[in-house]
View (cartoon, rainbow, N blue to C red):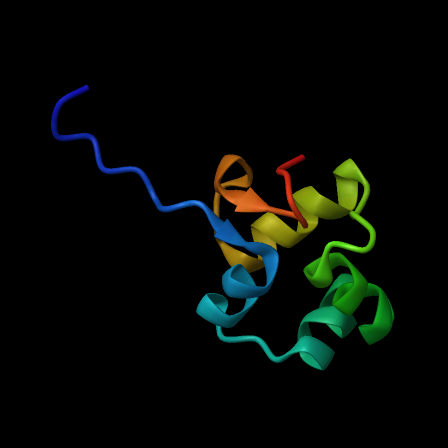
Length: 73
C-alpha cells in the first residue's frame, strides 16, 4: 500500500496528551476515577472493550494504534 500513511502506535497516556486532555478532565469525560485512568495508563489494569472504544472516540485516535500497558486491546 504505497503512499498510505498510518498513525504511529502510541501509549494510552500519549494519546490523551496528544488529544489535549489532562488526566482529571479525561477521567471525568469517561466517567471514571482519575485513579482508574492512571492505572490504565500505567498498564496495571486495562479498560474493558466498550470503555476503550469511548477512549478512542474521545482522543480521536484509532483503536489499532493505541497500546494499553504492554499490549493493545
